[in-house]
Image 1 (cartoon, helix red, strand yellow):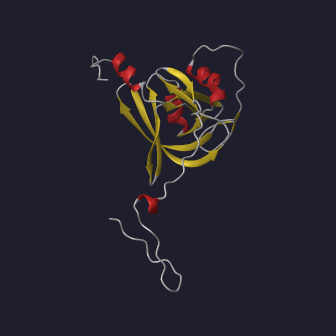
Image 2 (tube, one colour):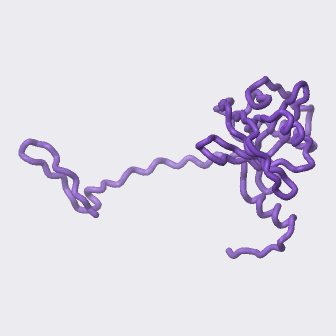
Image 3 (spheres, helix red, strand yellow):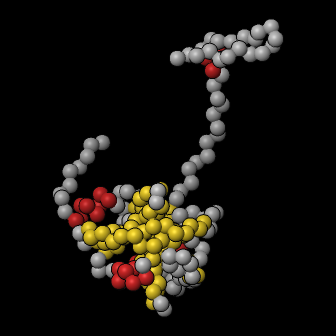
Length: 199
């Protein structure tokens, strides 16, 4: 199947980038008694030495001034059970009562209980990038949470969940010696000779 060329505009760009499936995170920051969270999927690791991550934040987002004031933030990776949390902090409608949300103080920013993992960061740099800020954080803390839970995913503009692949019986490994017509030879001491190099 061939490609369909699209017009070079914001709608087509969002459509194409929506085909890149991602996880869903909650970015949290706190300055004094003020705390704010924002749902994000534009999150990625940047460097292993030093440990750096980035998150893209719209310039209109209320999180940006708080990030500048706090100088730190936390990334909380959401589970499939936390879709309502994602919708809540994205300002989206959802069915049912408001989600139960519990935070605990942590390095970087508030850590969401029940999340898959959390990354505490110190703001390293805020880069101007069009209608967004690229916030680069130096990792100061790591924590793994609900290890048995599955991640919440985002694809084609919708929240998604992992689907289990059908179990297939393991295939038996082929008998390589038989398949190439070779045999093991032993010396008089009963030790196997080095394996043949089939190049």
